[in-house]
Length: 106
Image (cartoon, rainbow, N blue to C red):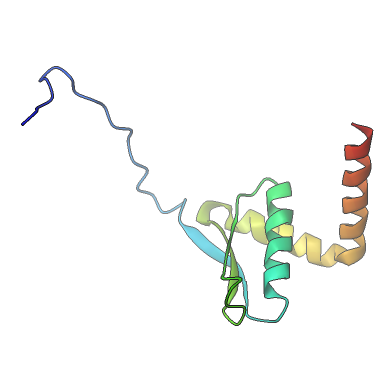
């Protein structure tokens, strides 16, 4: 059996055992448009600098879709979502048009 030499001790990175990086649910829905809404929320959060993941199965659309964020960023994510909902779809369309214009100019 092969053994590692005694002087070859590898240092492992220290694990972060706090719960601040645990994912918590910001949004969940099983409505017909749940996947679309979850993806829109995910995109908005990512654009705002908040990491998020969409959880759901496209192959089984009757199941719930969720958007999850790190526990430490939940308050910030809730604030961004409230602002986006208050601004309404018109603001989203304007922001999308502005990003397309910026992409075409660059």
